[in-house]
Image (tube, rainbow, N blue to C red; front, side):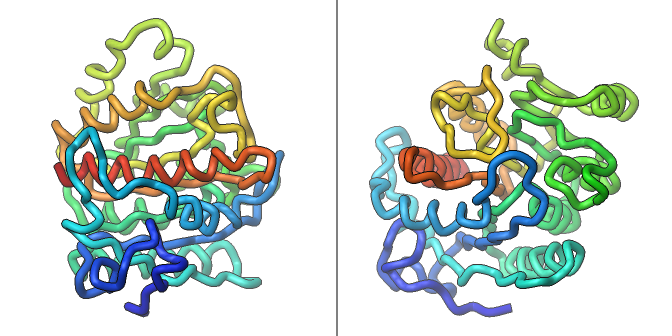
Length: 293
């Protein structure tokens, strides 16, 4: 594992070396530009770079928490992982090993994708590192198919792979799944908060919180957001989440639980919708501000 970091011109937020060197940073950002099984739109491999570039326009000061967390904790951005023609298994193993090593080094790890397939690797690393871990999934899709289009390593199967080692999963914003996934949820007692129920009442937040263990890892597929708000994603679905209801819940989780890591995936940058890149970058920074309050 390298401790080399990206320079100010390419790192998250565009911050000086004093606040972005590996040794001076409590937070590490790993870019995993992996894309091999997208179904509808393409371009998720460009997501991590787009988030980093857009982050240069995110304000350092967070008015809600009254802090500049990047200067208090330091954020080191590692060079993007390279996958080439590696198999899905080898690619995921590379991500897993990088996340695992950084956790062992005492870092708070943020992983940027790439398609959602990548998330099983950082989730596994965190699951092994932290006891009593819940996985909090923001998503439009259940991603619980056993196989999809001939592979177990599809973005549509990521949570089924996670469920092989932990079914302590809470899903938020789901509004697209097939019958087998609905049956899987019932059989394995996955706690799923469907978008149509969320939009009827805000009491879902307290209910979802009750189903989370002490330690929580967030996997955030940006298609959880409504496409009118964030359209640049591979498989958009109407009826999604919006900014403040999402942040209110993340803030509640961070306050009541121990948020130990997260990933943001499935941004497919589009020149027609540059605001999506900024929203994803802002989301990363907002979550970090909530974590360290």
